[in-house]
Structures are given as C-alpha cells and as structure tokens.
Image (cartoon, rainbow, N blue to C red):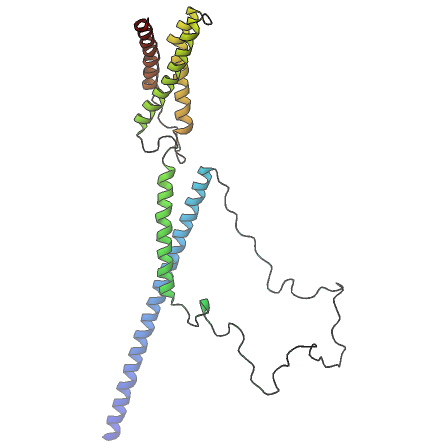
Length: 266
C-alpha cells in the first residue's frame, strides 16, 4: 500500500503542477491580449492625433511635416572604396605587427575584456523594460498630447480680432471704431471747409452718405478678414444691418455735435 500511496501522491502533485501551469499560461495569454489591445488602441489614437494636427497645420498655413527620409542601410559606406587610393593591406603570408608606439594586445590565452555597452538593456541599465509599464507611460504621453491638442484646437476656434468677445460685441466694436475714424475724417473736412478748401456740397455729401458707407464697408471687410477663426468652415457673422445702422447714425451724429461745438465756441 505504501507504493500505491506514493504513486497517488505523485499523481496529485503532478496534477497540481499541470493546473498551475495551465493557470499561468492562461494568465500570460490574457496579459498578452491586454497588451495587444492597448497597443492597438494607442495606435488608433496616435493616427487620429496625426490627422488632427495635419488639419490644424493646414488651417494655420503651416507646411505639412514630411516623413523622415530613410537613412543608409547597415554597413553602407563603411568599407573602403575600390580604387580610391587607400593604402594596401599587408602582403599575403606576412603577420601584421602592432603599429609603432601602440599598446601591446592581450596575452595569448587571456580572457578578452567586455565590449562597451555589452549586456546592458535600454538606457544602459541592464534591465529590460516591462511592457505593461512602457505601455502605461506611452498612454500617459498620449493623454498629455490629447490635452495639448484640445487646447490648440480651442485657440484655433477663436478669431484673431478680440478673441474673448462675443460675435455681437465684436461686430459692434468694429463698426463703432470704423465710424469713429469716419468721424475724424469728417472733422478734417469741416476744418477744410472752414478755410475754403472743401465746398459745402462735398462736405454734406461725404458726411451724409460717403463716410458712413465707407465706414460700414471697412468694418464689414475687417470682420471678414480678422474676425474669422482659423478652423471656421463658413464665413463668420458680420451683422450687416447692425453695422449699417451704427455707421449711418454715428457719423452724422458726430457732425451735428461738431456744429454745436463750433457755435458754442463762437
């Protein structure tokens, strides 16, 4: 019976080892599947980031980054060129001796020294990196790149002119500024009319129609040029009726205020 008990114990021990091996193999297979899925996901995210960065560069007018040109193959250009005039080697059958003043080589039978960098892993630490740790670090870098890309995209969604303002406030400010410039030109025309350079008909025509229309067109063009975000696919709102009312009211109003001031001063 002792022999049977030993046999049964050996069978149980072997069965336990087989089960442990199966569990280990299943865990390793699951680990490999998880790593493969993580690498695939990171590859898809990197491809999406590259496509989005290409779109941002095109919207900003930057040239696309070309793929790096492949370098020379291993060993290319390392051997001496035939017929290049290099010094010939030693004659056949002659033993090459050491160069004058060179240190003698190792004695016959001695163990050669270790080659530089031999036996070291990535970074010279001598320890191979854990794929899971490398994948986690790569995922962290991709997350950071996503965050920076979202910030760049948010900035590209803003126009260059008054980026923090609302479209309506921006339009009112632009049209009012153009109308103010038109009012200054109108003041110059009033002074010119006072000294006889500009007649009254020209002054009235420019004040009532010319300068308001020019101010409106200038504001409309400014909003179309600098009020459009870099990533906008359509023209920005320019609020033409609002701008026309602002320009038509402000320039003649400035003219009336100027006349009142002149009468008060006189």
